[in-house]
Amino acid sequence: MSQPLAKKTLVPVSILMAAFVTLCFVMLYGYIRSLAYDAAEERASCMSKTLVRSTSYDMLKGDHMALRHLVSNMGENPDVEHLRIFDKQGKVKFARDSEEIGMTLDLESESCNVCHNGAANLGPSNDERIRYFENEAGQKVLGMTVPIPNQEGCVTAQCHPGEADLTLLGTVDVGMSMKGLEQSLSRVLKALVGVWVLVVVLAIGLLSVVIQRNVLLPVNRLIEYAKQVDNGIIDEERQPDDCHEFRYLSSLIRRLGIHLRDAKKK
Image (spheres, rainbow, N blue to C red):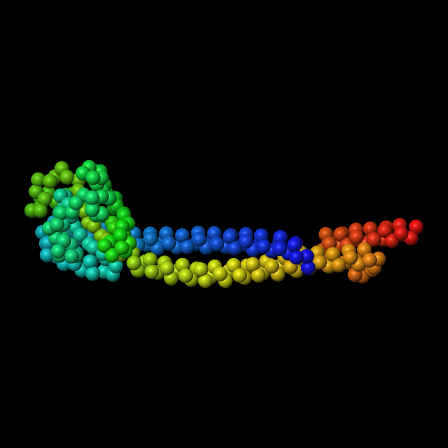
C-alpha cells in the first residue's frame, strides 16, 4: 500500500472529522446549558411573580403574618439562597432569614446594583432584573428582582398612605443557588465527552475503512499492475477492474506497455 498516499489521505480526513464532531458537540453542550439556565431563570421568575401576587393580596388585607409565613415557606424550597421583600427605601420588610428583616442594603450590593448605578436611580421598570453573582462560599447564584407595582387600593391601605404618585411600592428579590444546576451540567458534559470519543473513533474508523477499500487498495493494485507491465507481463486478466477511472488507467498502462514491447521488438 502506498504509505505517503495513505498518510496524506487518512490524517487530514481524521483531523477534519474530529474537528467537525467536536464543533457539533460544543454547540450541543452550549445549547443544553442555555436551556438549563433558561429553565432556572423561569423558575426564579415564577417564584418571584407568585410572591408579588401574594404580596398584593395579603398587603391589601393587611395580613402581614400570612405574608411572613408565605415568604418563610417559599424560602424553604430547594436551592433558594435568599428571599426578600424590600420597600421603596430599600429596607427589608420580609425575608426568609429573619435576621435580614429591618436591614437597609447599600445600593452597591448585588441586590441593588442591578437597578441602581451608584446613587443614581435608573428609574422604575415593570420587568424582572436578572443577575449572576457569587456568594460568600464562592458558589454561583442566580438573582432576580421583580418590582411590586402600585395598584388601585394600595394608597388607601394603612401601609402606603400618601404614595399615590409612586410607580413602585417595593421589590421582591430571589436568589437561587446554581450549585445543583452546575453539578448536573458537569455530569452532562462528562456524558457528552464519552459520546464524543465514541463518535470520533467510529467515524474515523468507518472513514478509514471506506478510504482504504475504495481508494488505497485500488491504487495499490494499479501500482502492482503497472510494475508487471513494466516487467513485460501484460495480462489482461490481471488488469484492475475497481471502477471506471481505475479501468481507464489500467487500460492506458496496458496500451503503453504493448507499445513499448512492440517498439523493443522492432
